[in-house]
Image (cartoon, rainbow, N blue to C red; front, side, top):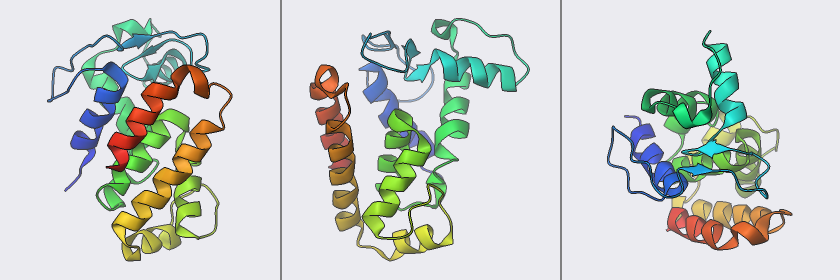
Amino acid sequence: MSRFDDCLLHVLLEESGEVQTGLPFKRGKYSFMDHPADPGGATMMGVTHRVYDAWRRSHGLDVRDVKQIEDAEISAIYRENYWDLVRGDELPPGIDLAVFDFGVNSGPVQAIRSLQRALGVTIDGQIGVATLTACRTADPATLLQRYMDGRTSFGRALKNYLPFKNGWETRWKRIGA
C-alpha cells in the first residue's frame, strides 16, 4: 500500500506551516513564499511557479499564477515530479518520506544520490535494483540516521543556508525522528 498520501501531508505541513489532514489542503502562514534567498522563486504549498508552469504545459493547460494552484494539482505535481521519481512506493517506511522530502527541496536526483551515498552503492542518481536491494537489507534506523546526516551536511553547505537555518534544521529533525 502506498504511503504517498501520508508522506505528502507531512511535506505539506513543512511547506505551509499548517497540519494537513487531507483534502482540502489548508493554506497556512507559509503557504505562499517569495523569499529573495530562495532560488526557486515564488512558491505555493512548496510548488515553485516554474514547476507549476511546466506541469500545466505538459498537461495541455495554460499557465497561470502559482497562487491559483488547486489541491488536485498539488497532489499530482508532488506525485509525478517527486514521489514517483524517487520510487517512494518501493522504499522502506521512513526512508520514503526522507527521500521524498529531500527531493522536494533539492531535486530528486540529489535526494537519490544522497541515498546511494548513505547505502554505499554506486552513485548514479537513479534508483535501480542495486539501490532498492541495499535499502531493503539495510537496518532502517541506521540508514535513516546516515541519510539525514548527509542531508544535514548538504543543507548546511548551501549558500542560502543562513536565512533558512531554523526552519530547515527543525524540518530535518522532524523527518529524522
